[in-house]
Image (cartoon, rainbow, N blue to C red):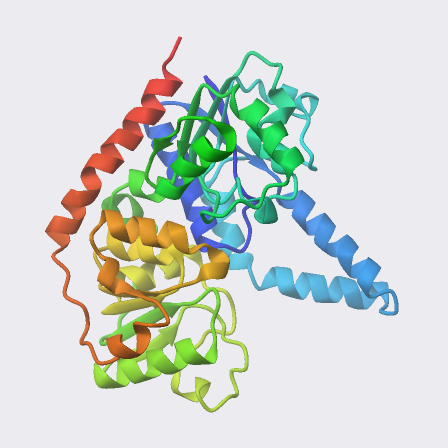
Length: 371
């Protein structure tokens, strides 16, 4: 069996990279041949073309220099992708079946991440496998996400996606709201599964971790940083005698607030990112995968609400693990500022995840072994 995985283009997102790494590793551990369809080349081309269109007055030399500088910022992430994930050659979207014939894929898995969120997936029908709708290949979604509970689909997209999804051999989604969306939007029954990163254990990630030496560290990973979040982190760290360390470069690093925070000038490697979460005394994040890896490594954490990135997926995960009190909405943030580092009974949390993880593994093995 040759499996092709279709997920969001891998590039600048730690969670997106690690969920694909985890799904590939789980499948390879179960002796499946697997590759991820590489849409990375298209993203670079589109980005460069956009620069030419919007900055006509700027010389080609300056545009290229700007593009390369931005790309070099993420070289550490690209190293992990190249060394740890099996990719096809780069392809342009929209995908066509003839484009992939040389790989002889007989199974396609769509997911995970927000592949079924139209605003995140410009070539939406590809993520419903329109390019192989008439082919006798196995079609599966694993942990596909709509991002939130509100539909972003047009009437035309609803009709087209419903037809395509009815051709799938197995449909699974990552959130309870996704189960509801599949039924309400497409009249399809789906299975709730865990994020692919949870298919692996903490031990599976240990060899990928770049450990650091430090004490009393509060590592924070913010996808949508703002003054309120940074102010909360500084106040919380001061009250708990922690050193605030940003896991990503902070904008406006010359501001008075940022002077009290260690912030890298580049995107740290995936191994360093894992190391910060694994070895810190506390993680504060507004990221779904920042939250998940805190749980994987049993690191105390607090998670800010992040509606623009999709609140439902974070809330759903915290509900399953009974860690809702670690979620900071606008209403609870000020109140939580007075709390000490949260105490968590990790044995109970780990046990609460076990049934979902096992049923998720069963879903994959069952649908991959169907005759």
